[in-house]
Image (cartoon, rainbow, N blue to C red; front, side, top):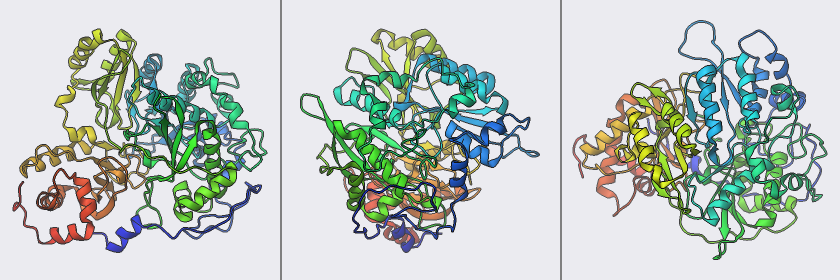
Length: 628
């Protein structure tokens, strides 16, 4: 079943921008709607339940605190919604029959993906003793730990907080983990990208004392968050609380940025340098690109807005969207502009219809020029035009690299982010040996892999030996398509999954490689991604080729994303039976062979050709008739 051309057009169309004048006003956060509200679906007549729950939670305390004190193995739906802000999801194994065996997934907050050796040791121990024995690197550069029982949550979270890390705001309607390029090059631009990702993470942290009250019995953590200490010289709290009188700061002594209702939906920020799109910068609500002068001094940031992946099957008013370029912001104003953007979403994002609550819908509905004017109404200044930059490139930063300071870094590919010991493959144990022996600092990459940094060149052979001894393949032995691929966890623990992803993606990669070899395309590299539902956690809608679960054994097929991750793909086919992968893909690859231009990537070809032309070609194709 192909999507109709009308559906394809809807998925990528832009509405006519609204022409509006903006003036800052005070906002009532207890009202059921706000001015300029995006109403892409019919709004409810009263404040939605989730918004009432946030208000009634006493700044993210209840009913969670009361539910944690019960003897039950799980918590109520309302308590679960509040628990998300504390960094945890309640799950159960959907393949286990009988009563639900509730367990909890815990997600860390790790700005810039940084992982100190002492934190890894702690996570390794906690996952072995109180989790399911493995760790999972996410697509936002942080670790998740699965299989924690309710009675152990406090021990695990308190241990993480006391070592100088956190789970606060890893989930929920707040600013999530701030991403950056994972390459630890010692250059001014890369250093600024890492530094400011931590500034932004600290700037938008929830301020409620509920976290320490619930998990630390009201005591202060034994150690301040490491990233907070690293950016003390930026006076982030002072910048957070600075009130320009234009409606950014609320009259709320607990949450002056977020208020009692926090944001309409989750909010994502990414930071990188010109040319390096290893983090999918266009998928963020805010993307910041470091701009330095020729002397390497920071001048400011190019800022983009309105990216986001989540959508809902059969709801054409929900869609994936790549961010728009908004303009250039000087370094001294960047925190105020980011506050203005967040306030724009806080006050004008759609709280009535949660499916349309992400900031991408506000930017899409207003158009970038009108959204920019809205931001300027909070900021109080005009935002300068976007500065020209070098073209984007994509690199996963795997293998050995010179860091630029006499040290090396090494990128270790991890299939779908699962750090585990399984048979002869013992990555989790290998990491512990490396951390204990070399005290290695690590970075989690946006593609669910690992980067070991600050390596003394004399230790290179020893590190490689440890990896080989633990059954870890050398990077040159990993299929490039596996390196490019990502998949979300999906079944059996994700409650939203409609089909497999992490567990079946390796077989899809093998089958695609066999098909490429059969068609005489042995060196072809295609950026492929898979999710078990349409929410887009593995960012499938940016891939050249993606499968999005829409049934137990079926997937939507998406084509035409950019190999450098600058545009969204389009939906080509609904209900692709996973057993018919080769039959489905061969005609598309045949057309690619016959009609591609020199050096044209698969995603660029599909984007140029379009769904209608590909469908017409495939309708008359005879299997086995074309090879390169």
